[in-house]
Image 1: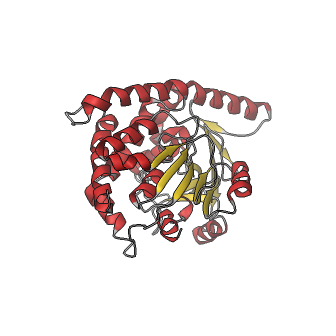
Image 2 (image 1 turned 120 degrees about the vertical axis):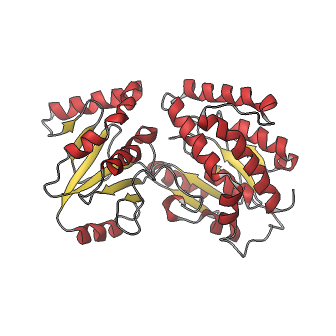
Image 3 (image 1 turned 45 degrees about the vertical axis):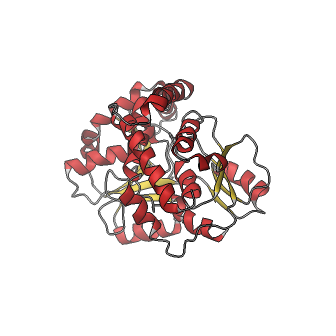
Length: 349
């Protein structure tokens, strides 16, 4: 396997295999005899090990990646880097993966392999069941991947590091990996700006932005800005189909806990049986809680976001440059976490 075009073909085939798990419909893919039951077993193990990894969340992650691992999407991504040349001395790139949502480290995994380097991945203990099967599939499709993928519990002397975690873990990463070329990601969250003229469908899609993956991702909306005088019941009535989140015991425990805390402390809030809406300045909200704030001057609000760019992953809304409602968990390959171009980084190491 000497050329990126060969690697693209391998990932396209992986995407076709993953599609059936996202769609929850078995096909006659040629890899099924060897890997279908293995992947099903890994998915079931992941669900048992991590209660946040419900079947819906895993299917969503598989479907999202199956939609991206196409010949067209991968080609369009690669051509954005006309200076790319096959590395004559491939580097070992350590990937410290988060485990907040299923396959959250896959973009880094894909980027390093597709652009010709070696992955040395430290998986999160919360998401370590599915990646090994993906590794086996890639090696089956092209044995050259065998020397390109390594899973480890301890990263030692990498050529470069891509690490994702909390603000606290980022300090640890900077201490231990600061001497290497690195991308170190910290906590971020996403917000939505309501103009007041949204359709019912757009507000329904906002529910997806808030509750997909139970709100655990940095691309989940945790705070909503609404114009002064806006009727929040418009949002409440639009998100009723998200009530499934309360069926997850971990989510329900969060809801019960924060509801009790707010009641004991006489904190005003609104609720609908599965979500708590609280007027609050803070961007980050705990699971099951959505912060909201009123605004009078949209231009001033957008200016405020510029000062918070290191905390924001996505801004959802109808203004130019914002992400459309319902699209936060459908990023394109070039929608890089924290706005840091992973491929440009890899091309320089």
